[in-house]
Amino acid sequence: MDLTLLRTFLAVHRAGSFTRAAHLLDLSQPAITAQIRSLEKQVGRQLFQRLPRGVTPTTVADELAAKLAPHLDALEEITARDVLGTDPLQHTVHLAGPPEITSRRVLPALADLVRRGLRLRVTLGAGEDLLAGLAAARHDIVVSDLRPRGRGISSTPLADEEYVLVGAPRWAELLPRRRIEAGGPTALDGAPLISDSEDQPLVERYWASVFDTKPTSPAGLVVPDLRAVLDSVRAGAGIAVLPRYLCAESLADASLVPLLEPEIPPLNTLFLAVRTGELSRPHLAQLHSRLVARAADW
Picture 1 (cartoon, rainbow, N blue to C red):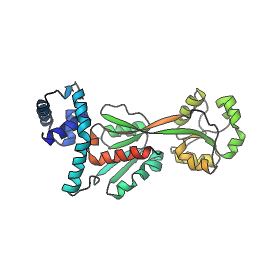
Picture 2: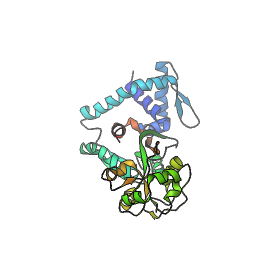
Picture 3: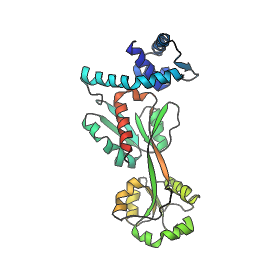
Picture 4: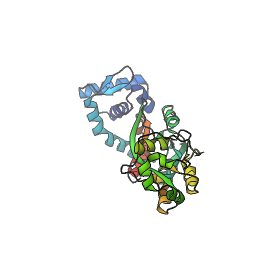
């Protein structure tokens, strides 16, 4: 069977659209349609159902894709590296994500790929803006603290962030844990909240999960970077809700103290998002699989 047909089939299966597959393979849409029809004739089964926008694979197509994908991806990598003499990592990837998780976790996980020749260009920002940039092809891959829901975007759960309510030791003395457990968020009145934005998204998530209510006090200090929030809390300016990974060292050396340790800590899932079908490109597939593997230890 012609490998070109199988490669086209896999691109359509991943992209969910003849148009997007044509873009990925640098072919015309009529060429994609003709190749899929040819393959359907050879296998004797319908592979895709046409929709008003895009296509959806049949169960036959899903089964075929699961069997083909690892072998075709490996063959494409071998062809690039051993036959053409190029490393599949010799590409530029535009990655985007929140500043803190990107700097503390994502970029260190990709250091060896950069040493091997991957050219990485990084944009730091907030969830909705980054996902809009991904849809508009300004980014190739996005670490998102929001669940991607847009059409044409595929996402993989990457890691869970655990949130911790922290303060410097003096605040732990002023706000004993038993008082917070008994009085709830009212026990925190008088302690300035430090946040990365006026709407205090981390505080809202923590209050909703632990206290089953919304915060009623505005932030005493707003600075649009959780690393600056961390430094302000360590300096004693107030209290904050922070991801545990970000303040783990400060908790270990006791420059910060958890003000509360709920039985079920608040969590938020991070996602790794790409445009549907883009993982057919070996360099993106390698970067994606590397992050998913490394995130298991985050």
